[in-house]
Amino acid sequence: MVLIHEKISALLEQRRLKKRDLARALGVSPQTATDICKGRSAITLPHLRNLVSFFQVRAEFWLDDRRLAPEEHDRADRSRIVEALGRTGFLQVDDPEHLLQHVRRFVQHHRDEFLRLCPDLSPDERRFLGLLDAPRGAMGQIAGN
Image 1 (cartoon, rainbow, N blue to C red):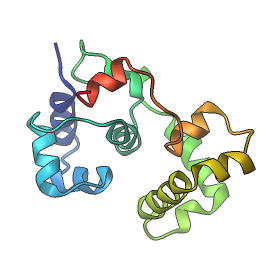
Image 2 (spheres, rainbow, N blue to C red):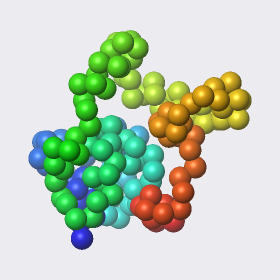
Image 3 (cartoon, rainbow, N blue to C red):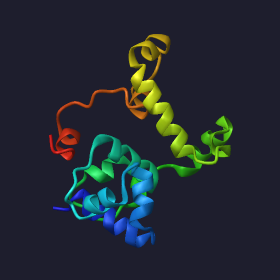
């Protein structure tokens, strides 16, 4: 059985990335990133979302305990993502991840009002903003709940 922290370590090594890069992507301290890589710290649902974004690998790969390395079908469609972000002007922001963290925090803090004003959000959009309650199951087990 392949664990998520093993996948993270393998991808960091393969892509010649540092744990501090992972820490920035997950919004955690460098020590927490090290603990995650060693399996001493749980992966939360927000961490999983950030892993998908950082490594450009679909969530299904992270939940599959049979494979250490992603296959072609696991790759997120980066060209479509970059094109969409380019149209929004998001890529012109100096630190888009930092901005996105603030937007998510604000939306989550004003959750009820935001959902009332935007009732047509898709489940994927709600998930992206951190507004969906994860069902108890595989993802809940990742966080050690």
